[in-house]
Length: 68
Image 1: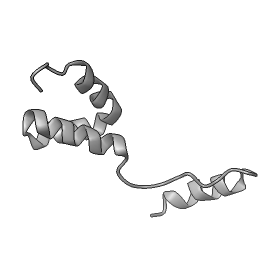
Image 2: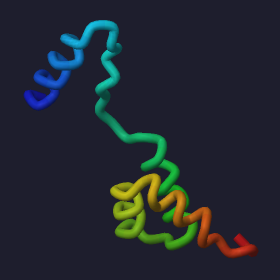
Image 3: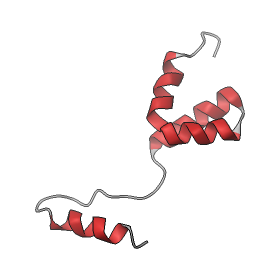
């Protein structure tokens, strides 16, 4: 994890700034994967949806069919 150390040091140097750098899966990615899996049942589409996260969530909400 050598890439995170410089970022943490930069964040620590900003006065009054909390350390908001985190590593992990965001809620947008989780929602996108669940929506993609529910619609497509495809691991490939779920992975792509997680990459685009919130863009896919918005697309899913706008393109949703009435019977879903």
